[in-house]
Length: 207
Image 1 (cartoon, rainbow, N blue to C red):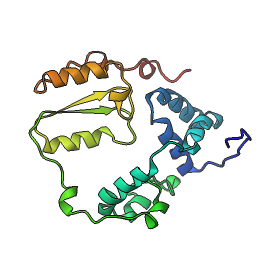
Image 2 (image 1 turned 90 degrees about the vertical axis):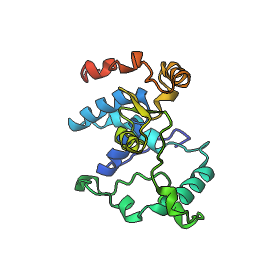
Image 3 (image 1 turned 30 degrees about the vertical axis):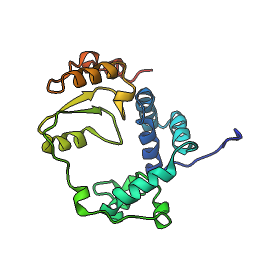
Image 4 (image 1 turned 180 degrees about the vertical axis):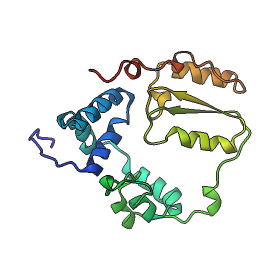
């Protein structure tokens, strides 16, 4: 709570997944997430607290009206609610874990559009495209990037080891890579430091 009073939370499997998801959102929290998972497997759950705070934190400042307008009119009309609420392949321990782009409770109140079916067709283009992907991105995983390349013969993919969502916003080499691509769009940018595996992935889980 904002007043600083303590809050006790009971975590089930779905709640644990919410913590892990929040922990994978930024590259700086990946190592603490791995350590917290290791501790939880040994019966220590307190290291999960920072991730739980992040997940339950305030969404003040988020443009929810814009987000709901886009998703309810451009994407969710093509989705089946049952697939969101009951995703395939989820083990019984994670029953109840739902990761949706917008609160599903809002769908009954927010206006939804009826886009043409062609709006959901894969984009096909031979224009040179640079697709970047963070290795631990929980929002737009690398397999989505590789799937998109099937329809983009001019595309190249650059995976950022150890990074999370939107690595072009956070990696120190991002500006150089983007400039190199714009200068020579038909040539794969030199990865440089991007190809280096972060030290925390090489040194084990010891703090």
